[in-house]
Every structure is written in C-alpha cells, then in structure tokens.
Image 1 (cartoon, rainbow, N blue to C red):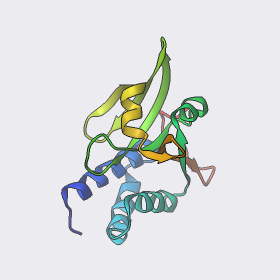
Image 2 (tube, rainbow, N blue to C red):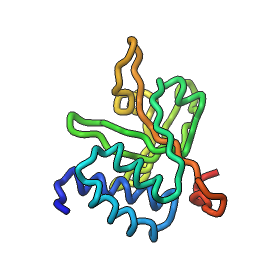
Image 3 (spheres, rainbow, N blue to C red):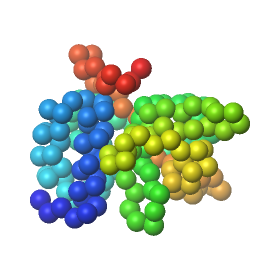
Amino acid sequence: MKETGSDLFEQKCLRNIIEYFDDIDSWEIAKKMYAVLEEKGPIFRIKTILEALDYNVSGKTMIMDDLININPTPCVIYYNDSEDQGYFLILEQIQKKEECYEFLLKHPEDGHMILTEQKFSEAWCYIRHNKKCKGFLFILEMSSPKKALHKNVK
C-alpha cells in the first residue's frame, strides 16, 4: 500500500480511534482492511472498518447547539482546521465553563487538546445547509454485549 502523508495520518487517526474504543489487537485487522479499502473515501473506510470490528456506526450531521445538547460523547468527529483535507478525532467530552463550552479532543499526534466553543466550531462546522452550519460525527455502539467500551467511556 502506498502511503502518502495524508494516508499515513489517516491511519494514525484510525489507530487512535481503535485504541480508544477497542484494543491494540484490532489494529492488525484494521491495517489489512485499510489496504483493501484504500481506493474508497475516508468516511467510508473508517465506517467499514469499525463495523467489521463489531461496532454499530451511525454517521450524523448536526448543528453546534444539537451537539452540545445531545452530547454524544465519546464520539468520532470529522475535523478540518486547515485548508487541506480534514481528519478524524475523538471528541471525549463537552463541558460548560462559565459562559461557554470547552471541547476535550484526543488527537493522534498531539494527545489531548482542549478547545473553546468558537475554535472547535470553526474547524468542525464545515457543511453549509439552509443557512446553518453543521459538522459530521460518528456515534459508536457495540454490536455484541461481550465487547466492552474503552475504560474512558462512561
């Protein structure tokens, strides 16, 4: 499999997700599947691999207010903080701090990041529809009862 810079980073994002929600043994399966699915888009690849690892994966778009009110954490978000291609991060927690909210994210290279509501919104809300700005996320649930969520998941 050829690894461009973005392919390699996408694999780091996928590994970050798998290590958070599952275990390192699943990473070997995911790497093989990634090679088979390399011609597909990143959202399709991530969803297909997570489903193969026995997760029910729901892709959702929502406005910022809904994300805060529903608070589906932990979840996987599509994040785009540059002019380049976006990538996947784990949104671990949304917490109210005084008059605004803070977002705790897990980044595959930078570790944990805490962003203000404005900074998070600028990178997450990239879909424009009916004068509203939405972001994309995956909500993961276990398909089988024997599979346990990551220790950080409440």
